[in-house]
Image 1 (cartoon, rainbow, N blue to C red):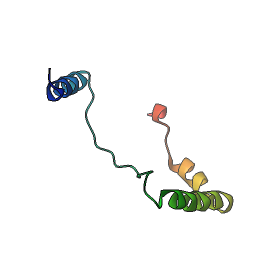
Image 2: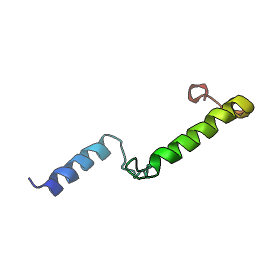
Image 3: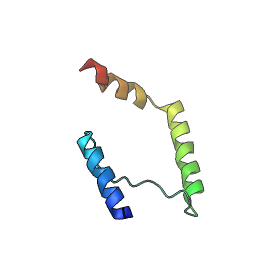
Image 4: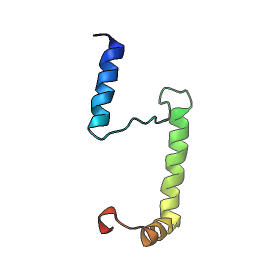
Length: 68
């Protein structure tokens, strides 16, 4: 069985099991500026956590999945 046939069969079984294929784009951790950008964003998030009530607002307007 060729690779193409094995992949096709695997995808067919997954669809039959109720799954669907999606494509997800994620940051490239090998990029030369990844570490610096990750550090910059984490520093911003850490600072925001000390100065903001955003999370309180998010929790006030959110509904837990098991509440529906």
